[in-house]
Length: 222
Image 1 (cartoon, helix red, strand yellow):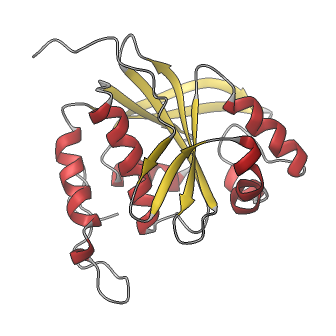
Image 2 (tube, one colour; image 1 turned 180 degrees about the vertical axis):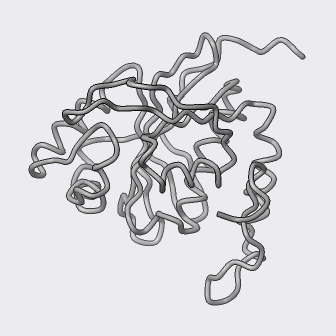
């Protein structure tokens, strides 16, 4: 196995441009109002993840500003190119350039969940981390009860690695963590599948897919 080129660069791109969405590094002054409308006010989206829910727009703005300014994290607003509005949020957490390891988290609004723009958004960020920056490992962590997040991890090509017990005390209860990861050597096959699925030729005029996205870890689409 070739020696990795370490340390990796810190993920500091201001813009990752796609066809349906762009990923913009979060600027609270520009993105807070959109993100509050698309994801912040929906308490259900935050019920199975550590932060939130938020009492009001001011509480959400304070939280977003704090997270956007943390040196160990990088936040990206997912901007719909048709409307120009931010409709979801990506987190890069526990970024370790020395080891080439980072963790990905997300909150998708209705415009992204199980929709083509949401898949493209993942493709943009994962490709930036694993391909452009050459990170060795990308992690995905979620509550075992968060079925939608677990399904998304498998659909996007992550491998389930196990359950970490009592990793946090959050929202007045013990919090277990289901761990998934994608390695640099696994990314080319995942990227090839995503590229084929996202091709305009894979969609009918009504927007329905022709060939489903096949996860390397499952025999059929989730």
